[in-house]
Image (cartoon, rainbow, N blue to C red; front, side, top):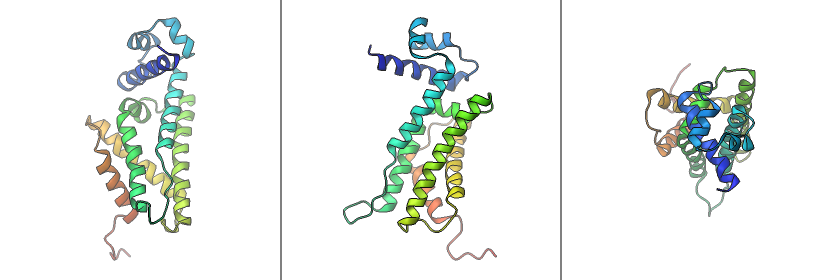
Length: 200
């Protein structure tokens, strides 16, 4: 097996164990047994469990970034709405497919220690910053109205976290990514109130 394949094998085994048993309850021996490798082989690739956790988060963020496409306007392009929907769909689909890692993010690593908190905070800040950049670009393209992009980005990321967390808590299968993306974009783009509703 190639070194890259062996590294991926260890990461996959660890992600599954972290997601089902929890980070603290998973030992290096558990990971070694799950991956079917020798202890020495493990230490060729990773110093400890923390290094695995951090690499898993880094890989997830890279996967998210790789799936986001800049909206391009033009007669030969899909509509802006379709392009935005494709972006949301791609991210939801990735997160839904990585349920073990999602469980770590949402349940298994929160509040473990300062190092974990800092890594998680960094991950979410990258996600929020990415959404905020997209919103600012949308404003220049006259797709997004004049609003506080930081608050909007926090709401978008927070909403997605809660939707996926709800599915995990209920023990449900991953929600339909396309349907979830359509609903999220509809609420984000149209808001909650009926057009013309008087709330003052």
